[in-house]
Image (cartoon, rainbow, N blue to C red):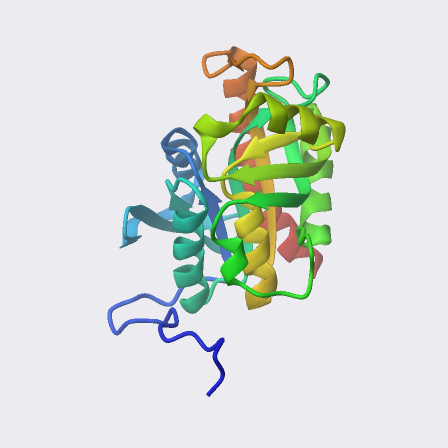
Length: 247
């Protein structure tokens, strides 16, 4: 028997709904509520995956689900595994991040092109890629759409950690030197799972705080941060409709 064979695989239960191909993962309750308000033909509370709500609706003429909130790599992967088992194949993850670079400011948006994993989930998903990244077509579409809305967008690497209270001076300085743009908690694991399961996935992260000067400056109440998160939610939902209309 293959020693790498999983004993438990995610699967569709008898009472689970068949889901559409497209899904948005939203990490924070604040953004989840706003995104749900933008959906047409809403089916609120379609199901729950442990602590995460799954809502259905349409963007343009595309059916999709919006799932959230979720915190950290284990929960995000647990939710996405179930969504994949129910039919999801194209995903955008929407969250927040902390800036490591002086030019990446609160209210900007990071579109990760890869991620350094310091979370404990990715290692359990063996893939042939050392540092997996997004589905490029999906990531580029998001980047272009955000720029067209006047959002300051940065593309590059992020650092994903399970331990936000252990973002140490030494780590921040080293990852600044490597050119890593920001720190989050989920992206590296989601990229890894997407490669492992063979689905499309991209991520967009609103910059909520800054660590680049080795002190913590948060911008949770800054108007620009709130405004650009709303733009981000709109762009993500519109992306599924726009990409579907090209095919």
